[in-house]
Length: 461
Ligand SMILES: Cc1cc2nc3c(=O)[nH]c(=O)nc-3n(C[C@H](O)[C@H](O)[C@H](O)COP(=O)(O)OP(=O)(O)OC[C@H]3O[C@@H](n4cnc5c(N)ncnc54)[C@H](O)[C@@H]3O)c2cc1C
Image (cartoon, rainbow, N blue to C red; front, top):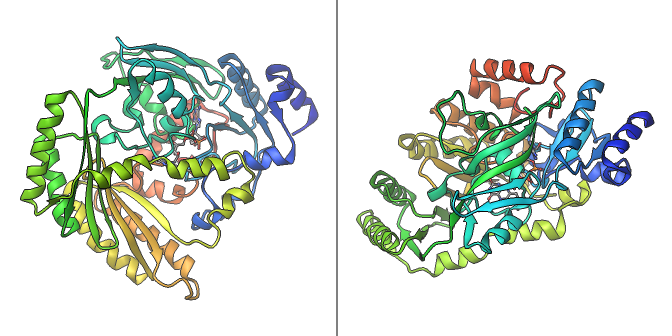
């Protein structure tokens, strides 16, 4: 980027907050996706950011975006940089806008049950601040220690408490956003409106293509009066699936619901939180339902253990990869061939999908080492690895097999990803999934971002 533009940016955000050293450009041109897991999207890693800007206020974000719009330079919103789909990769170069200096918790209201925070607040800091008021957020992903509020809104992430509280998008009461032309807009923190479309929804899960979120009002919850950890073992995934479906149909909503099949063992991890009587009744009825489907009560220990270590992988990422150069991040996955798929399907299709995808994967020299349902029976995950990693071309075949089973999810009425966004990794399959509705998204994009500067190359735009 030419020095006159750097000078202008420096006048807006200060010299310390305009980074142009190659070390910084490199580390800001990455998230947690490595080329080894990109399967066909490797070219998205070729470019580096030309400058990194770290604004300290909404006014500065607006000025910087306004300049980028005038200069026709791509802008890439950047939170924790922990996304796993390459959502922050500067595929066309340009300016990374790191929002982590916007890290104030502006207000907490136990009565409104909301907290108003700046975009770059890390979830862990929100947990700590709310705990002082006897409150907690509804979103509890593995990545609590490293992900930001706006990053998790922009991917509509799913966490451990999603069975009761829903994904991050459900936590949003209001947003302040800088649009691609630099205009600042905000919505109002009410739980329901009938005064036109809900604009929050335009930005939830949109991976920064429609603007930079600068503030969010999120729902918060009282810390539970009672909590009960439980676990059940099943002879088969199908039996556990039946139990989960029945729980949902009855209206039971544990905080944590995770049905996992690993090494031939099927376990349902459960946590009930809330007021005493509700927790006791939900626990009792759930264990009865599990028994009806052949489940055995295996006590709370498996879930207690699981719960205690749920943020461990993110602590590890924080120590070894966060804010580090790309090679350091990528080396964590070098030589490992696997993919972790998170699909959503109608409940009626999940088990049939599992059977059909097993066949497709086997035809591509791959197998599943872990199956899971997270928070709802529709949300189905598979960890896929090559059956033999010494066969010629095994990685390409794994990538091909993954693409085929993602397409199968689309063909069976579902979607290919429920939690991490599509970034650069799944871009090529989006048009197939969306059909003509992609034209509507394209029209909205053109209207809001006529110069196409905001995170270009993402969401098929
Ligand atoms: C160890 C580990 C564990 C994980 N566990 C989970 C998990 O349990 N559940 C889950 O859902 N995900 C998980 N993830 C993935 C990741 O943490 C989430 O995708 C998270 O939501 C990304 O937040 P971030 O702040 O790092 O966003 P980033 O990676 O910085 O950005 C993600 C996307 O949002 C956009 N964006 C960022 N900030 C803004 C903004 N202010 N305005 C507009 N757009 C913006 C970016 O351009 C990008 O497209 C995990 C990742 C790791 C490394």
